[in-house]
Length: 208
Image 1 (cartoon, rainbow, N blue to C red):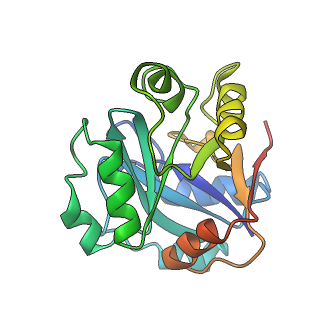
Image 2 (cartoon, rainbow, N blue to C red):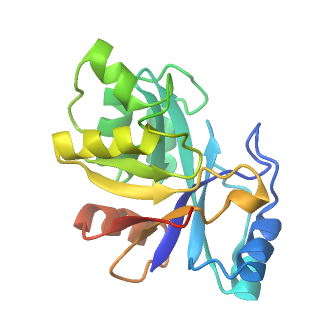
Image 3 (cartoon, rainbow, N blue to C red):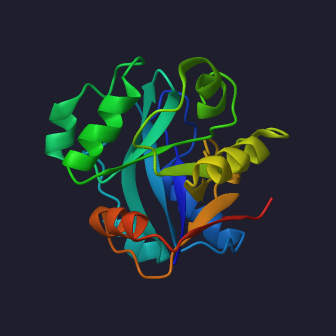
């Protein structure tokens, strides 16, 4: 199963795409993904119900979050009430250690994203802050990366033996499906996604 793990809708402050428009684009362009995850900035959207769109377009639509830490931005999958109570998703200075530890404790999975990007990625902060404990998976293929950034992420993953995922970091309709993650089994919901990330055997894929 192939899922694009990193996307933003109009729920994010800088997102310009409606979820229905993402679905229409995927089908119109025959993008080879089975679904996508909405990782809205500094929040978890528990209000929107996308089940009707899932049925209409035959796509899996899951939810996560993108939070901000002193080491850069981090995707969080498997968000639940316990995790939302553990730290303030709206903060822009969350300790990475807290996000990693509390995600693990609450049955979620934290994944630092676009590590090669200046200021908001891991690579630059490793040089100044040192290597944090607890990172297991990073985003090695990002649809929003510039030249050299994904290469830096891949090198970081190899150096520290991190698993790698892919996501488009789409903020506009035409960017969805640029990068994704191929899993060896079906993923039905957020719990399945966390389990699949912990099991391993997945790989990042890119079409651009």
